[in-house]
Length: 156
Image 1 (tube, one colour):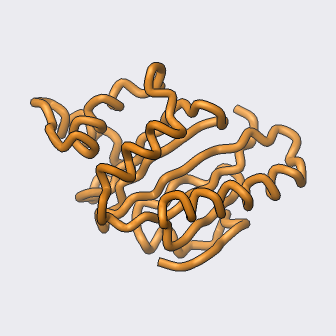
Image 2: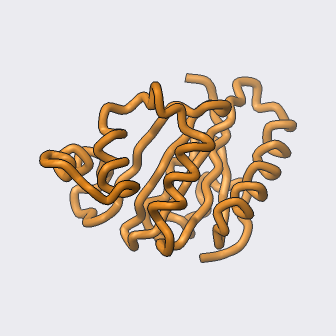
């Protein structure tokens, strides 16, 4: 897998179904989402009408066995390298897009900065981060870590 510049925006929970619907419509290839749990996620968090078995399917998306709410869903994007949706431990959202960067090109960081600013505005995000092969933060504690973060704007 080539290196990827990942960018994420932190969105507070108010209006979560509408925010998720807009993100999915705009950025996710819903016809070929890439993860079989996408429909369970949509029913649970967008339509808010989970089906039997959806909670178990979504539990598989937890990175940490101790997590109560946190989960990340990695999806195929319409026009970017990848898309991701994370529900944080606090119940907020972290929306992510990945930019393919096999040659570590300086232009990619500029493009990431512009996309980050655009997404922050589009989703009224309070903060944004970016970095190469940066996993989506699943809590405020993870969001504040600087290890792989190359771009940071705003604060939670």
